Amino acid sequence: MSLRLLIVDDESLARALVREYLASHSDIQIVGESTNGEAAADDIVRLQPDLILLDIHMPKLNGLEVLEITGRTEGVIFTTAYDQYALKAFELHAVDYLLKPFSQARFDEAITRAKKRLDQDHQALSALVQEIKIERILVRDRGKTHIIPLANIDYIEAEDDYIRICWQGKSILKTQSLSALETQLNNAEFIRIHRSYIVKLDAIKGLERINKDSQVVVLQSGVKLPVSRTGLERLKACIV
Amino acid sequence: MHPILSQLRSLIWYVLAWVIAGVALAWVLVVTDSASWGAALLFAVPALTALGFISLSAYYVCRAYPLANRQLQNMIFIFGSASILSAAAWVSLCLFVNTIGLYTEINWVGISMAPQLITSLFCLASLLYLVSLLAHDVLLALENIRDAELKKTAAQLFARDAELQVLRSQINPHFLFNSLNSISALTSIDSSAARAMVIDLSDFFRKSVAISCQTHIKLAQELELCEHYLAIEKNRFGDRLQTIMNIEAESLTAKVPPMFLQPLLENAIKHGISNMSEGGTINIMSKLHDEWIYIVISNPVEFNVSPAVGTATGLRNLRERFENLYGERARVSWQATQENFSVEVIIPFEPANTLL
Image (tube, rainbow over all chains, first blue to last red; front, side, top):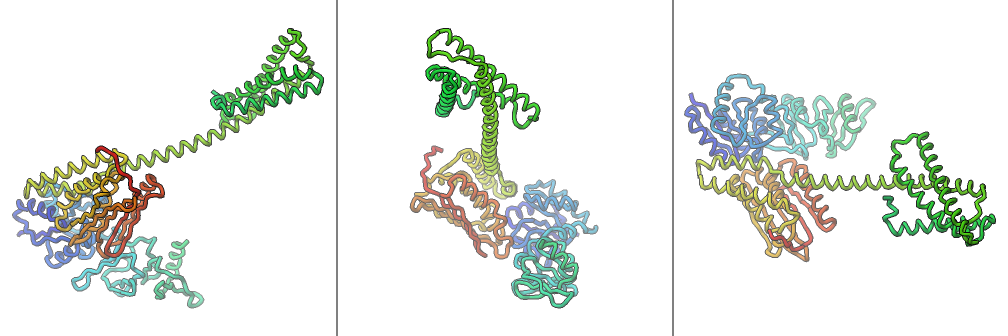
């Protein structure tokens, strides 16, 4: 049985090099080449490759964002020239990566190791993706990728198994739990004010008392959100 | 040596002050009927001038015994004994000279030394020496403060220089490793292209090392370096990286600090072109206008890439560097829109006379 492999890199020479190295692997079939992060996400969903050679720095989405948005947690070999931040995370989670420029021998070794790991559990990658602090929220909706920079967001609301991201008067649903998102956000900028709400600190205009023991957060946009007692404490701790 | 001895002006003022004090002492001698005006002046003026020079030795006492490690008892003992010894030496000198004077039996030479006068002279000298000790303490303290400030400024300047050295010699590892990866790929696909890229890379590093040691270069040299850099990056990005150079010939001879433009191009690629799947065009413009050199670099940026400008640390460093070099006469400004980013550098035009 041959393994189906996807090459993801925005540089054509880098892709050519991988093709050349793969020539000696008769058991591997190249099913596609993606030249940016968004295309990679599409190709991963569409082609369901067994192995992905994934560059980190790419247009549209970076390598880690590609994993996050596709939910892919197996059969990934990262390639990068230099990225101290990512490398540290890879080491921490024992995720394999290739440092450009790499040799045929090093490449073969990574492929062999990836093959062996294919049937094992894939905690490492999901943990890695989960802990990386994000700079924008990605939502895949009917084959299209929406990118929402954190700077534009007002608040995020939990809705059953989804979260609703609200920004500049628009909103979109994403399949994720509010708690999972909370861990990815910088807690100096985003605050969980309620079981169902995370709000961006600088989107807040003020607090308003509705009755003796409950208050609401009023946003710059005029939207009012409920705030729980612990939420209020968190809010005060951030402002002081 | 005492600092006052090396400054003629202050030395003259200092001696003059003591001469006046001598005249005052002579007046006291005349008033107390110890001597006639002639004899009093002849005695008092040289005597107090001599005391002035003896008082200068307080400088060495104070310096040998710095303020920082003094105890009160020790200080009283040392200052007290120094004053008494100096006063005793001075009075002995006065008595010796006066006695010789009296031997000449000329009526305007020498004064009559009553025991009370000797005691008074001794007390006066001790007191003046003590004042001199305190004055020197203040002088030394002020000198220390000034020294500390000078050292601080020097240290700051040094740190800035060192930082600049590091900034200049810094090879962007991302650029280097990616270039080497491209070469690695080219060796089997197109070996002559691989060789050309190795040569471009060598030329780039050789030139950047050479111009980094200069304090200033011609804009033409900086642009040449940028061309090598862009040639290497065009291998990596292919058609995605386009450039338009709009360089006025008159601006080429302008004197510029080395390695200021190349990092801007690096930013334009890193934050602009490399984030765009279709790539884009970097515009490089330079012109001479009214004795000012205008240099503008602009590049497209991908919509929605956050943060758009990054932390702009590099740009702020560049602004600070130009501020240090030109003061108020340079301007580094940048402008970010959703689709475009541009940096403008304005410096006074000065033709470079470098041979390189």
